[in-house]
Length: 259
Image (cartoon, rainbow, N blue to C red):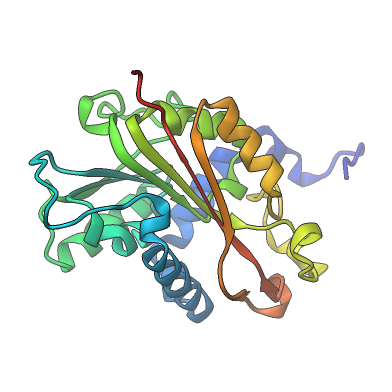
């Protein structure tokens, strides 16, 4: 609701959603990943990605004679949920997050798990507003031409999901796959929506979920093919005040080869 009277929070609206997210996640930092329901949700998503590896387009076998290493971008990486889930299928992973606190948490965890920075590291960066979060590495070859790009649980934080998917697609190599995991809109999933979810979002969420049509339209517009969409096998249990049980989706699409 737009309020037309002046109130002390007026300056909040002056900030872009990206800036608000950045501040919010810089503040909560790695602590958010210790919250029990977040841990549970992360494990849930990791398991689903793992189980769907072949459907997502991972066809790695020992017979794969290509010596070229497989590279993945974990966008809005947080502390590296998608990276950990898909690690068995890729060789090199780069993370990117609008929040420096998150990129640091990612790097710390990668180090703890014994990965070298060459194998796995994250930078602070924003593909939607590169000027707002200047990153000298953003336009280096190291951060483009990916075989896989995954964005988990972050599309609902983004100001313009259509442009976001376009920007991610530009970073794929030919034949590369874009994977998105996020909420299915309550209207489509039939999950009841808690009244408080709206207040809880703290001005950092643009929507409470997506329909298949929404996301497919974005993928089509970005020129991606081989569309795939599925719901996760079970719903995600969140605290009642945040929304209770909600349904997640996994979407995939592939950048065509210019033959």
